[in-house]
Amino acid sequence: MSRLDSFIRRMEAQREILNSVSKSIHALPGPVLEVGLGNGRTYSHLRELMPEREIFVFDRAVNAHPSSIPEDKYLFLGEVEETLASCGDRITEPAALIHSDIGIGDDQGNIEIAKWLSPLVEERTAVGGIVVCNMELNLSGFNELPLPEGIKPGRYFVYQKS
Ligand SMILES: C[S@@+](CC[C@H](N)C(=O)[O-])C[C@H]1O[C@@H](n2cnc3c(N)ncnc32)[C@H](O)[C@@H]1O
Image (cartoon, rainbow, N blue to C red; front, side):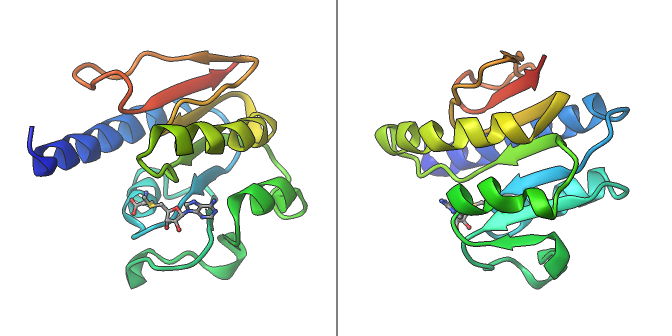
């Protein structure tokens, strides 16, 4: 498969999963946490899917399209390891959805990230809340959910807090 095909499939999987989980959390209160703003494409999609939700965004820098830059009160700038650990004074409710897209495409690097990301995500998710991540996490008290049909296993990981 060409890299273009692979990229398109990854984006389609991302969109499909976000569409699906936004329906699943419909009745669950709590904000959405977008970990890794990047260009802001998934942030833009989450805003369209859930215009009524507060969406808090984490990144070390803002490099997003101007139409996809959150207001300051929804933005946490710095290393996620620090900002996600200390955001509790501004984000007082557990999250209905956490979407994390900060992987580096390298298996060993992702394993290292997952070590510190997993406990932070565990702590910030509401009971019944969903975590969507581009790398495998090690979450206790969560069930891994099946991916929507047609998405290759290992491309994305979806968990629900029990
Ligand atoms: C792949 S991009 C996210 C793309 C985004 N989902 C989109 O659709 O445009 C990953 C982002 O995560 C940020 N990032 C990666 N590791 C981080 C870390 N440890 N702390 C803060 N930001 C990080 C990078 O700066 C980058 O902007």
